[in-house]
Length: 240
Image 1 (cartoon, rainbow, N blue to C red):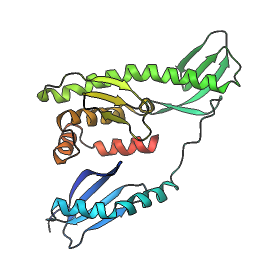
Image 2 (image 1 turned 180 degrees about the horizontal axis):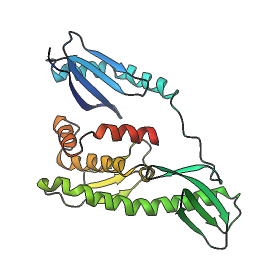
Image 3 (image 1 turned 90 degrees about the horizontal axis):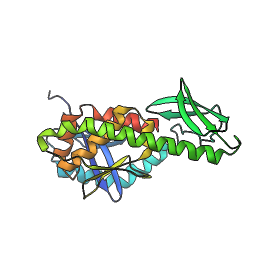
């Protein structure tokens, strides 16, 4: 009996991108499944042609999105941040307890397991605390993202890529993007994730410098340069 073959692929459906796992096995029919963790699995006979698989997915795309929306209501949600002492905030995958202290000087720093915010206003001015934290996160994101980019770029040595410009930009539905002009855009929320998750996004976007579209060669390159990338993708989506 032939072994099951597995691929991680992506299909564009309007403005939505459907990431799915393709399992080729010894079976006679093609099936599309949506699991409670929002993952999409396509089970197909070994020799099914790729266009047939994509057509089946597109025919079920509306149902897939509907199922994901249904399952999403059962996923744990991060409670809204109130920016008061005692709540937890993420930085590079670790949780820190926020401690807000009234002080003559303004500062934000990590101290042990705490994220210490000193403010020259009343602690009840949570919007000011929020702004201080946002500035702190952004400054650290600029430094960390640049460092991780410089560490990931040598993976693409054979493609002779130049160092792309890096820009931090809030994007409601994306962790990163590679622009036609060769710039990498990164969501500032990434600074809350482990460095392996940040590397996954950077390598993904750098792969677009070689293959602009999410085709088979793109995913082959991503898997070659970042084996097991899908676990970091799942970790990222579950963490934040």
